[in-house]
Length: 117
Image (cartoon, rainbow, N blue to C red; front, side, top):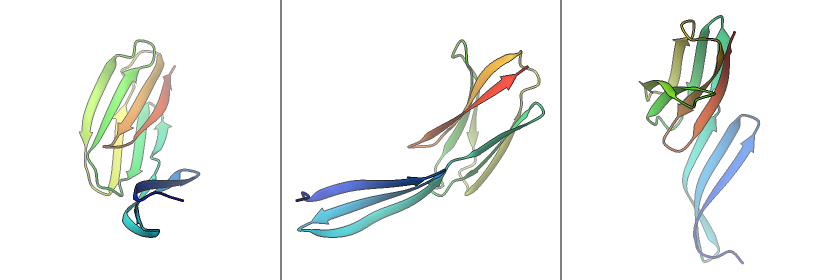
């Protein structure tokens, strides 16, 4: 038997995730909230990192770049909280090495490794 209370149900298929908040009382289920999340698309074009993200929750987003070896924060930027977020960053001035690009929302974050030769 399931106890009364609030539950979170997550279903993930490939790069998409549905998150539902459910409330159960006396065996009856009420859906309180539903959110769809799709992982961002990162790609390198030359020395430029391009990012596209569908911000279904329209939450505040931040973009960070860290040195993969030292874990030092090299770059931080507040991004638009609109639905379709597009951003590009030029990595041509960085030394050879590996870097982590991170897109962070209020509840999730996504990482992408960038290798500069």
